[in-house]
Length: 261
Length: 309
Image (cartoon, rainbow over all chains, first blue to last red; front, top):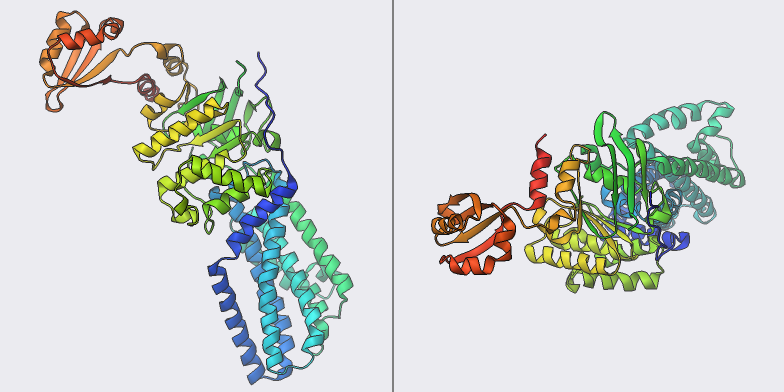
């Protein structure tokens, strides 16, 4: 039996260029006029809530609000959803058939997509946080300057680990929201509130410790140093993305037509 | 000639659903049509050779290598899927540059190649800045073909690429594929438009219910395609007179007249006799003839054989 033809390809797989390609496609789809409207809407909503909190509560209520609602709920949920949606998007036939048939390892593709998506998310929410802090300064909330670095670190870290979790759950199932709710109820709300070492597994528990100095009376958590919390949560993100890359590499892309066959 | 693709006892099942069932075949360089009714296993075959799914049993080799998630093989292949879904929010040029870079091209090369390929598939420049999702189906098919050509693949796999193209567009499309083939690129193409395929392809792979029926594939083997068709259709002003003339010449064994459409379908006793002397015969018959074509192409005949269990 004759061996099959073997020829040298004109192009060679090149991870650096592949990352640039993924970045171009991701950023161009992320930064669209629709996204600008979403940014404006997010700011109006959160800014409005901040104003209500500051005007009808006390000026000092701003920090507990931003720690518990914005960084403790909005950012984790939005990061999870956008991360899961980003990787699910890569698995849709409109994208997968064009990207996954190209000469790039799937594990690399997951890493590139995660980095590109994360950078876009970080830039988006950086604008939101800066706007909220600007609003707080305008409303003369005290100690904004000294709190800003801690808030920024918490936001960057929360976006990183919850986006990674979204990637993992996005690869696991197209019903990632259901998985996410079960996970949140079990780990973040359930185990995270139990006063044992197990609560360390909860990422929101870790973030709560990081933000405790901003809300010393309202928080029941012990304060935690950024030097401990940030590496730990980034480590979680590495684990999630590693698992995601393994699962994604082994996954068969059957496609709608294949299912029908 | 060494095969590009070689499948040995290849099977792929989706649970209890059959994709491909123990097929063995070789595909040589050139333009090869993959033909079969819906559900025959064409897309499964494409996904196997693109490394998107693994065989349930058996082997498939592309360029002598296992294609499953293999960037070395993928660097030499390009795919144009049947699915009309394209990424939203992207313009053709942006999309192609991004895909070119993922394939390993530098930014400059990706930009240059993207513009060249959009010109090659004749996408008018005013559409380059529109979002891909805003383009018409035919324009989108051109962009989908252009993305295949970016990294100069050695094998292009096209799944129903001519859907949505008008006749001129199909001709443009075919010409691009022919010129690619002359440049040394092989093409694997599936389409339900058998006439276009027969005009384009040098070889065929017929699939039925996940199998490769030998009898049907023998009908369209390259050697047999050199023969004259066994039946011919004439559109003329007096079909009955033309039929009498052919019977007098002892050329035919039977015929059907469709008077309303001025058609005569003829089954030849010996088609070589007619085709080797057809200019004289048609001049002598005394009938005004508007059209002469094969009644049923070999591919259609093979497909009809394929449909009959």
